[in-house]
Each structure stands twice: as structure tokens, then as C-alpha cells.
Amino acid sequence: MNTHKRSYVFSCRDVQQLYLLAHCMYSVLSAPHMILRSLEVQEESQNNSISLNSQFLRQEFKLVLDQLKHRAREYHKSEVSMSWEEYSKFRSQLSELEMETDAAFARDV
Image 1: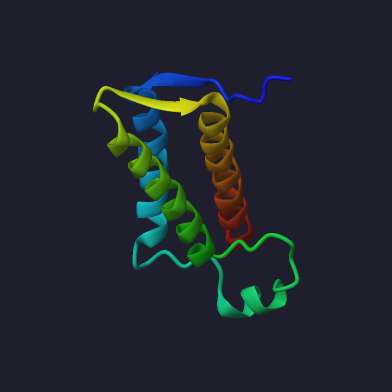
Image 2: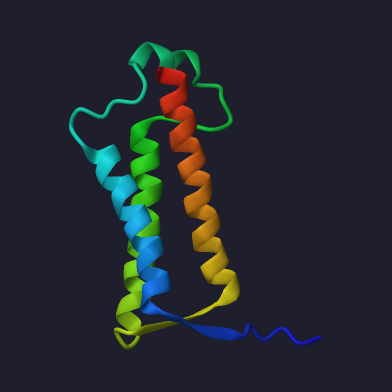
């Protein structure tokens, strides 16, 4: 069985799209007026399996941003080399975080 992970070269544009999405969401969640859930609601839902408060979401987006920045700096500016699994992981993380953010907004409306 071949366990070697195949590395792909993605255009910087592909990775920039992921980065921009994460950056936009992080910026929105970092705005001073952005409090997604009141303290009472947070306390009531503390036993939820998914934490939907803005601080948690900001931290998660920041983690993705830092990882993408690190990857982009390692290689030539026009391309980024990473495995398909890594690229898919970033896309999945961002999709999940978007859904969690949407859910947080929906519950507070």
C-alpha cells in the first residue's frame, strides 16, 4: 500500500480565495459591535455540543488564517504546494465555520 501523500501545486489564487473567505469572516466577527449571543443565552446553551459564540468562531477562523499564511509563505508567491487532503481540510473547516456562523446569526434574530 502506498502511503506517500501526493502533493499538488495550487495556484495562489485558489489559496487566496480560501484566505479571503476566512479573513472576511474573521473581520466581521471581530467587529466591536458583533456580539452574537447574549450571556444569558450562552449560559443556557453551555451544554450544547457546538459552541456558537463569536469568540470561539473568531479563534477558529484565526487558526485557519494562520495556517494558510504559513503555507503561502513557504513557497513562491504564485503557487502553493500542499496535498489535496490539506486543501480539502481547509475548505471543509471554512464550510463548517460558515454554517456555525449562520446558525449563530439565525438563533439570535
